[in-house]
Length: 434
Image (cartoon, rainbow, N blue to C red):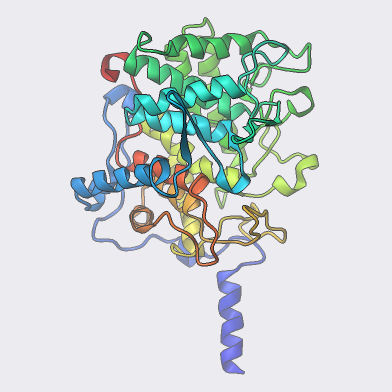
């Protein structure tokens, strides 16, 4: 009986049911590397990018090899999600959902421009433009968000706003890195999307991707869902890039969007745990019609990485961002640095209903969240933050014990986070791009 009682007590401690209040594990730990110290200025000002892996004690040649292997696994290896089509095109596929979506296509382009892989970038762009970009009609210039890459039948005609956000930013970076005279007019393509975006006022049910009233990115620009946003779509750093390089006359609006996104994230990320819902209104509150998205789930994993990017590039909200890193890393550390789950109620308890993925309905210690929570260490002020860096270093992109494997979402977030922590996710300026 004593052993059974002990097991029950341990279960309660490990799986709190009344909220997040495990004060002891929120205390910092001892580490020979001392407390992590975030940089106080952003790369836009300094031109410098932090290599947290090197600071953690890993060798540069090993860091380079780890990033190269991750890229190989996702883009070239036997479990790749990047597939060439003919001599000039390629797509990125969410294998578990049997589609290609603007999320992954635009992520692939961002990784390609960051790592100076022009052929990969151009191939993905040509395929995306040919098969997903609307040419004419009320959605002109926007992209259908999902397609079956084998039949080329679109699964939806509507737009997921984060795809356009990444497409535009990646194209602006490509223009800065490679110019516009080597096969693709990258700047012209970015402006094509932006100009189309500004031509839409809702009169045909299609709106600006950026809600002009609230100065925030919409969940979708369709009128029936235009009152919603997704916290993981809020990338203040990208809006700063648009303000610098779009040159379309909306520079101040984009800067306002960056500042508004920072303020929005304060509201959306819950005070004690740092967790955020998947979908909210523009105040950061979950909407009633999406009750099952009042949860920290797959989309939400991206938020720590996005906030870390904004800190790394601009450091304009650094005090709140450092505090956020402490809160969310404390919460996950209390769940177990090698065991924390991937879906939570906002108070830190586990959800009764688990959102399935790839035919599996289970909580797991997902590589995607391991990766993005490690990226938050760029803002870390605790010795504990080193443990998240170490956890990502030791993680592997491989099948889980139950057979589930996601080289698409886990894999792309893994590559992104390795890029962030090795100093390889950068603002590409014209003078440094070539």
